[in-house]
Structure formats: C-alpha cells, structure tokens
Amino acid sequence: MTQNPGYRWRIRTISLVLLWFFFLISYLGIANFLLTAPLIRADLGLTYSQIGLAMGAAFIGYFFCQGLGCPLGERLGPRKLLTLTLLLSAALLSLTGFASSFVMLLAFRALSGGTLALHPSATWACMYNWIPRNELTRANTATLTSSTLAGVLAPLLVAALLQVMSWRYSFSVTAALTLVLAFVIWRNLRDRPEQHPGITPEELEEIRQGNRIVAHLSKPPTARALRVLARPSVLLLCLIYFLQSAAVWSCLAWTGFYLVEARGLSVTAMCLKMPIIFTVALVGTLLSPTLCDKLFRGRLRLYMAALWIAGAIFLYRAQAAQDINASVSFLALAIAFGCFMHSGVFWGLPRSILPPSPYMRAVSLIINAGQIGPITGIVVIGWIADTHGLDSAFLNIQVWLMLAAALILLVPGKKLSPGAVSQ
Image (cartoon, rainbow, N blue to C red; front, top):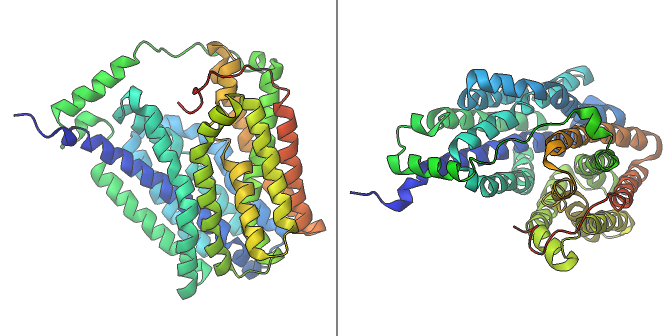
C-alpha cells in the first residue's frame, strides 16, 4: 500500500528546515554583536576605529578560513561539520561576553568569522545530497530568507534580553540557542538520504529522478584567473561588488551606532526600530525580481544603478530628517534599496555577459572582491567617525553607492528577456 504522498517529501523538507534554522541562528550571533556594539564600545572604552576593527575582524577571519570548508566537509561530512561549527560558534559567543579588552574582543571576533567560513561548504554539501537538482533554486531561495528574517527577530530578542541582563549575558543566551540547534541537527540530520532511518523508497526515487533531470549539465571548464581578470567587464564587476559590499556591510554595521549616538536613542529603543527596517528590506527583496522584469524590462544594469542611487538619496534624507520616525523610515528605504534589493538580480549580470568557461572563475573573483569590501568599508567608516563624526562617515557610504551605480552602467551587457529575472 502506497503511503500518503505528503510523507514522501517530509524527510528532505525537515532537512531543509534544519538548514534554514542553521542560517537563522548563525545570523543571530552576528546581529547580537552588531546590536550591542554601542554598549561594548562604552563598556570597554573603545574608539570608533577600534570597534570598527572588531566588527571587521569577523570578515578577516572569514576571508582567510574559507578554504578550510571543503577539505573538512569531505573528511567529516556535512552533519559533523555543521554540528562542529555550531559548537565552536557557541563557545566563541560565550567568550565574547567575557571579553575584557580590545585584543580579546578582536581575537574572538576573528575566530567567529573563521568559524562562519566553514558554513557554506557544509550547507551546500547537505543541500546537494538531499535536494533534487530541479528543486535547488527554490530551496536556496528559501534558506536565504532566514538571514533577512533574523534581522527582524534578532533585535526583538536582544531588546528583551537587555531588559533583564547586561550585554555580556545576552551572548550566553545566544550561545545556548546555538547549542540547542547543534543537538537537534546531530539527532535529525544525515549526510545522505539513504542514511536516514525515516526515508522511504518513494522519496529516494524522487530525489534520484530529480537529479537525473539535470545530470547532463556537467561542470564547465574553468578558465585561469589572470585570463578572466583581463576581461574589462570582470574587472568592473569586481570593483562594483567591492564598493557595493563595502557600502552594504558598513551601513548594516553602523546603523545601530547612528541611531544611538547620532540620534540619541537608547540601545533598547534602537533594537525596537530595527525590525521595521528589516521588514521593509525583506518585502523589497521579495519584490525585486518582479520589479526588474515589469518596470525595467530586464535591464539589469539600469535597474541596479537606480536601486543604488535611490539608496544613497534615502540615506541622505535619513540624515537630514529632523524627526526620528522620519529618519528611521528613510533608513529602512535606504537599506532596502541600497543593501538588499539587488541581491536577487545581481548575479544575472555576469551570467548574461560571460560564456560558460570563465563564468565560474569570474564569479569566484567577484565574490572575493565582495569579501574584501566589508573589511575595508567597516574599518574606514570607524576611522572617519573618529576624525569627523558619524554623519560624515555615512556620507562616505552614499559616495560608494553612487560610484557603484555609475560603474555598473559601464558594464557591457544585454537586456534579459521578459520574465527571466523573476524566474
């Protein structure tokens, strides 16, 4: 007798839900630090430059440790690696709460970033094993929504925690949640579908059939890095992604400081404003592919330039607004347009202008440029805040957005067919 069809996909759905919570908890740890950074700075007596270095240290650790993910994943398997990274993250979150000096804080944040660098290899290996290839796009989109939703939930959690404990103990609570997820993943996740005791023959066959649909799509040959960099379009895209990533992460890292120290909000009040900002960003991200198709008819370069120019303008209006509610509203629009809405469409640009051979190498180079951007941007903003104030520092973010908008119009490319982006 055939079981209920709904049960056939239940096991791989559970695996996908576990990965969704994995991303959610990972971002919660990041958000915990960014939201409490004004309190950490005041408690440890740090300058803006020093707290900027502490925030940027996580990206430095990530950049240098990302190559460890693949060999560790092959040796341990996704289940062990996911559990290990969660255990390490929990330990480092707890240690962050006990940091008593700038050097300790810097070290813990760099190690936390190195731990985060192990995540992509483990999660992608798990998705590759569990999710049929013809479902991967939807599964990846679903997991990516967790980070934006965490931006809505994390400030509410931190605001509640700060009512009953200091910023130091808030990291212990985040660490405890991370440990709970490590236990759940260890108990319920397996490296491969056939290893799970609850998997049915029907579901295994569905996964195999889904993989056969795209089995003919072999990996294209990879071109040499220098040869790919010789293409002006790739160099431009690297520079654009560097500027854009610097602007995005600088804005996300320093918005809490701006609301607290330039606008006079308490950290708790700031945390209660942040969900508004991320809710607008979430809605904008979901609507972005459709807007690109319907309003700009697939003109990716023009669409992204318009987004970033709008983000810069809204950020300027947020600084100029006298009323705090108006300022928060403009900040929400600035972060939505300048930081999030391009994320669903940006990678359509290199895909539309590059042949298969250099595409994978070009994407790797562009991603590396995007990882250097936050390190540079966050530290530079801290230095400018020390020397000229937070308002001047945020003007720098606007300049980066405008430069990225101007440069993307110089990238050669073609208009995508109607509906291609939203699909």
